[in-house]
Image 1 (cartoon, rainbow, N blue to C red):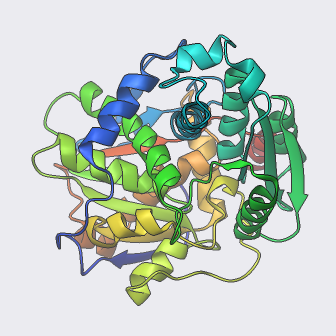
Image 2: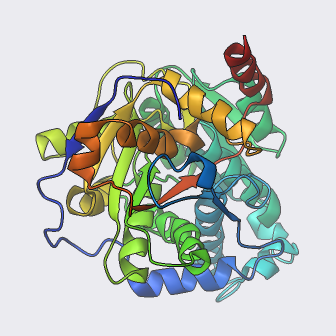
Length: 386
């Protein structure tokens, strides 16, 4: 399907060992009830990719490019957390006991929410989603971006009314700067990466992400999927998908976590059997996955639930991006990583055997973002057309 590219595959020896409950069922029920009631909510499509199935029985991809305004799965997580944080602050101040998303959106608490600031770090999608939520729920927003974030992605966040603050260094440096300034200014942090002492907001964000996988399970027809290939940055989306696949299907599909080879912190953690950070500038065209430190909550799930971890090069992701464009699907660079992992694995005899991929396999992937920088996307398409 795509060209020959080097990749790394690590079969997880801890797969299937019982672990801690990271995302309780009650939290997901609350998130689903809230998000499905928002104005503009609709399930995103699940596409059959029969022509690209590459020797397996079924290949399908869940397309998040039309998810609310931000056009990515992140619109399910960050905005839900913003809503919860604002409602909690209104309750703490005695303004409203249980402010709903509708009440926040119609501006009835604007006099208070307008004095509040939400903040986070981002490589693009999460910050855009938080900025969208801040505009929707009438609060101020400050987004910290590492130097590698393109101007187009910065402009998309600023267009939603957020203040964009560049930070020298990587995404993880931006996370630390957002946390530092938030503590000094009494801002509300909406980080999607969990660390010791900061877990509840990332947990709420991950509960929102579960809705994507829940919809996919509703939309799936025929025998259930045998494999899921899902991309990861800090791991929140991958862990949310893992939990929901296990919840919805009697036999959980084999979950393969796919990362850029220059920003593979979960792969490194799996290899070391402990949370591990990866050094360097984390330069990758899969900008939304350019993370050097895993989320604590995500790792607690994936350490034992993931069947395998993969790393892929940028060139392979570009091949997949172009292949999908030819098929009429417009997906951003980070959104094709899981499918790219599948294409590379299914074409390799050893990887096929290690993952149990065969003619009866049924594979689910997730296109977690639409185009996040049109200029860069068009340039990459043109580079493959020459």
